[in-house]
Length: 239
Image 1 (cartoon, rainbow, N blue to C red):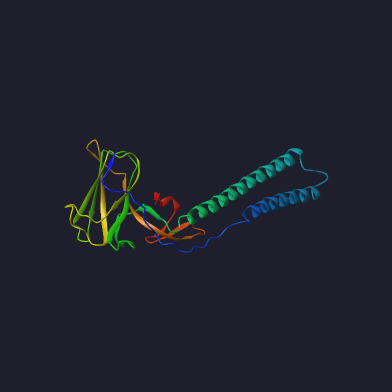
Image 2 (cartoon, helix red, strand yellow):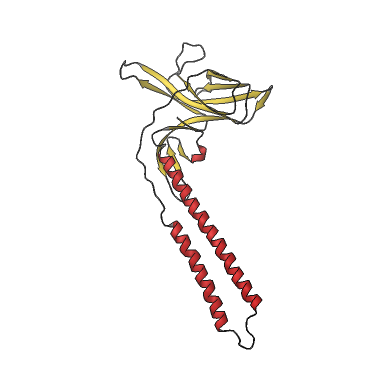
């Protein structure tokens, strides 16, 4: 497989983040299970104390109620375990998300930001952009067309025989004629993937987002980026 572009790693600004942890959910769930057991046993004892001595509770009925207690207790314990696992998973996801602060991630989108950079040593100015393609199916050919704000195609790139996966790409602003440099600014791109003469519908364009901070709450862990909020599952690759 050949890629007509150089893979590079972008530099993203680091911004402080705030995190929250949950340390009492497991204890609370255990207390709820014990409370349900206590209520059930209290009702059963009260029922036995107030039964008709001439018509006492049938042994089968008592056994049935004890079985129900065992069933309810078991279900509550399973629920408590699942809640504890969910809390642990959320904490692990939050920790992983924090490690992304200051990094660039590729998420679904067709935007390109061609940025101008000045080398502190040489003083020379260059332009560069990072984007990508996610392929759910292997393709024989993938064509990437970059357009300016007027819809004019300024650069065409290709991937030959790419397999399933995510492919980060870079563009230095050079147009198709090989000599013209596109000005820094916002561009868009389209992806066309084919295999066996047929167009594939599962090729997804990816745009670069800089992670500034992380939010945690009832909606789960969110990455706050230069392009908005994304979940961890939205991230196709970390650069």
